Image (cartoon, rainbow, N blue to C red; front, side):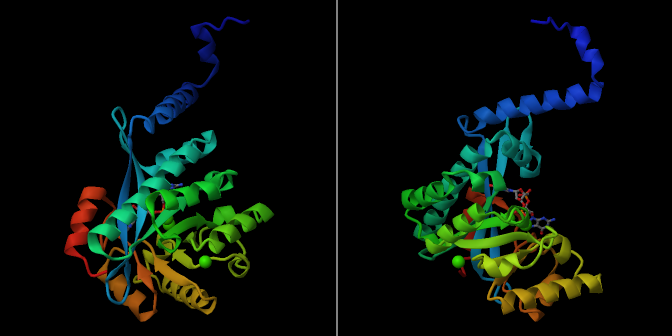
Length: 279
Ligand code: C2E
Ligand code: CA
Ligand code: CA
Ligand code: CA
């Protein structure tokens, strides 16, 4: 075997080694994170645009690492995808999310749907459907209360397997939504061939509906198209009251964003729920 001394690192640009070292460190921390209970779900309400009443809740993953502090999903989900760690992490998310929704049902007496993000690699794992069904049966949550959020990126692959899994989940009564709608540059035809229930308009379109007439037109067109296909619409990233007036006028079914609430850790969400229990 070749002996690589310290000097061999000189062949790499210093930034490169730093980046890959950082990656390796993160990967090994991530491998232990489930066991060490470092993951946490935050919850963000999705409300009925007209009434402001709670409709459902999106579960958003956080990683509390002693060395790195709170790590946001955009920083670690891609690495979890690459390494395949997304499968066990995603399984934990599903179980925890269903358990939380069942808890709110018990505390409020109301059915509160839970939306869970699913990344492509997790979705393509052969055990995915089984994992979902297990999360439901273990928690006792009805399938109709679970919505899986899938990005356009996943649908782009256009494979028979993807279509088949979506059909299975739909048949089981689980709801399916297209997340980040409008960002995937994909053909719209998938909307009629796949069993989606909900379309989530990406926040990049919602952000400027008041300032930019083009964005307003796009959002209006998306809502009308979705409705004519029998899909419900959720606007993401609603931050200002003016946006809520626009969305009401355009008959956008549901809204989500900092204007209503930031994503909250479970204890804070419970408080929010008691103060906003018009469900
Ligand atoms: P996403 O599914 O599009 O989630 C919405 C993101 O927008 C969340 O960021 C949320 O905190 C943020 N947000 C909500 N309201 C507003 C608002 O009014 N203004 C703005 N500017 N942002 C708002 P977060 O929690 O950092 O999550 C980022 C992404 O990470 C998510 O985007 C989702 O794609 C992914 N993600 C989160 N949790 C999970 C998970 O459990 N599994 C997988 N596979 N992906 C996840
Ligand atoms: Ca989402
Ligand atoms: Ca369906
Ligand atoms: Ca989104």
